[in-house]
Image 1 (cartoon, rainbow, N blue to C red):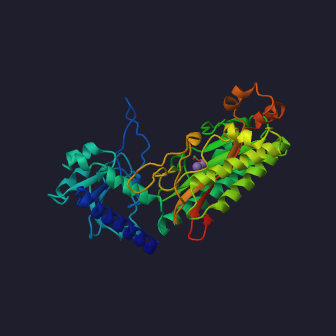
Image 2: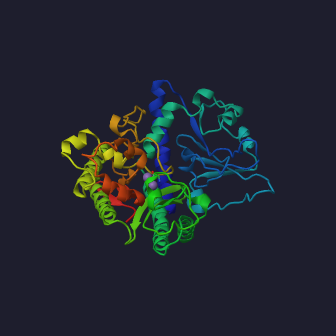
Image 3: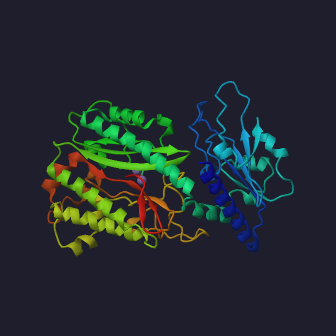
Length: 436
Ligand code: GLY
Ligand code: MN
Ligand code: MN
């Protein structure tokens, strides 16, 4: 761990140095970058704290998800970590400083963030990266360098290719999540409620509600067709037919994002077959991942595969080319095939054409696709095809009795939908599935 973290920091240091020297000829002179973790907030009209999320640009340097932490990065100098531990008797303030990461920094303990004012190099053009730009102004950092766009775009672009340390964290986050998924499967088979399944997931994955990278989606039966279903019904809906669970974990801030769909014997046999089909399709898509492939192409393959399944199981009827032209697969598969994954579940720069931040937006017909880039070794993203029976999308087509097999669709709507999601690392030769 010590070695891989030290190498990770060396990579980040080099990225900052190269970026600053690239920007200088463009007239953007930056001598140092101060990464800020963020400041704790409270809800409007309340003194209750909003759960704190450290800013990813900072977290990439220091694995301490605490407010008011800062890292000063200067070319050819060891980065300085300003470790703010307030003198406070209301909340736990001490935290572990482990040598595996702390050795990569000059650690400067502070009891108040304002103490940094006397410690920053004077007469230097310091770029501030973080949400609290009012604090940056208070420190006298030039406002044109607050989250300076050229710098931020380049660093965002680099974040898509993970260092070996980062890949290891995502792998660990997957291992923990998988323990939760196994327990969730058992809970579902035992007939537990969504809430019961969720609690078993947390227990087995070894985490609290606050540690999940996103709100767990634990959807039984028809609720699985609600893409971001957030409720946890506390009572069993009568009979557990199908479970869609989308739940992750975090390791030093890095996320896993995994979805599984399970069925019981009581589910409609076509739903079981579709579930097997989506599983197979997902594995086939993962197999296509390799450097140089465009993610848009993978997404198009996913749509072709979903249309195959719909035709094979007589959910829709008609000529393939007409169905493609009518974009029928999008009614059953309305989301993107995946997204970059890292410190953010939907990691940034999925739409970047290059490091300057010029955008490559998704195709008009696939506006929810979060990733349009060419695959590169070191990228980590999800591959998550799905097939759903979503009344709000299907109902407007009720008059089309030629294309849609309504009697079958109406039998399948109570079982909701299917999604299978793994986390994939692009390698020089192809890919590694970090989830299986
Ligand atoms: N868990 C959110 C997603 O799969 O994108
Ligand atoms: Mn995802
Ligand atoms: Mn997910």
